[in-house]
Amino acid sequence: MDTAPAIGLSGLRKTFGSAVAVDGIDLEIADGEFFSMLGPSGSGKTTVLRMIAGFERPTAGRVLLGGADVTGAAPFQRDVSTVFQDYALFPHLSVRQNVEYGLAVRRVGRSERRELAEQALAGVRMAGFGDRKPGQLSGGQRQRVALARALVVRPKVLLLDEPLGALDLKLRQQMQVELKQLQRDAGITFIFVTHDQEEALTMSDRIAVFEHGRVAQVGTAAEIYERPQTEFVAGFVGTSTVLTGPAAVALLGRPGTFVVRPERVRLARTGSDPAGSGAVGSGAVGSGAVGSGAVGTIAEVVYLGATTRYLVDLEAGPRITASEANTEAGAATAAQRRGERVLVSIRAGDVVALENP
Image 1 (cartoon, rainbow, N blue to C red):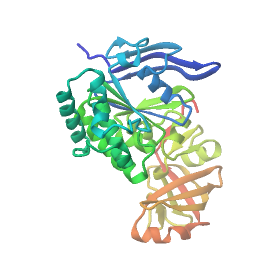
Image 2 (image 1 turned 60 degrees about the horizontal axis):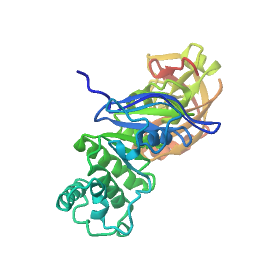
Image 3 (image 1 turned 30 degrees about the vertical axis):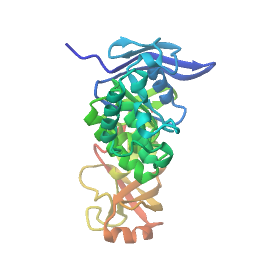
């Protein structure tokens, strides 16, 4: 017998007066999955999360938890926990008391509460911090306490509403890895809301990209990045160039609307053998190229550490973005390429055709 999805959303819709926040969402999230809802501010992802948690009542549609309809159930009647961006810790309680809070509400005995709280703190690498107050902790430590408090009650689903947004970059990247490992260890379904594409790509088993209250695309990180289905998804998740009109014909040999990622674009000096040592960008133009190529001028060179990004103005049309991994020699001379005329080519299979751009 098939296991019911951890979360099922059917025809989910939410309006606030005349404003439509969520416009007909259908999703199934598997048990034990790390699932991210990714999108810009106002795209509806947090409203969906709040409807799963029970903090908002849908205008239409259903929310199912483990196959059971919980659309009308109160938050405390749902087997879910939520971690917020501001952590929502009680400042007057100790770390241990914060973690024990949900167990106390469930009338778990004092000795068992303490034991479970200590286990939860150890699980998020906060053993020995139980007697401190939240104000004595760093941002990353408070984040771990909030996770321990949410996980100690062993919910079926853990909801995370941009929980890393207040952390600095290095700590945020560290917590991305720790969160994924924690999810694997706990075996609990995580639903993670973020506007940060790197967070979603790093941690998720699958991602739903939100646009104007709808789901634009659902897939694995590789599917979303390598095969975006719409221009919006291509532009929001990573850097891309949309090719159409004369540029598409020159580069691809056929009309239409296509998306190409910068690492798939190849640049070579005009007047040189593209397959020779004069090639720049992500590699030489080989026999797999389509179209005849297009001439352009490097307008900007952006050094990004591990890579260099080239913004090239095509004679046939728009500006196209290319990137290359930096070598010791290449990085030193990349800035000197501004103003250089280059031949831009793209190999077959390195573009995605948009059916409904």
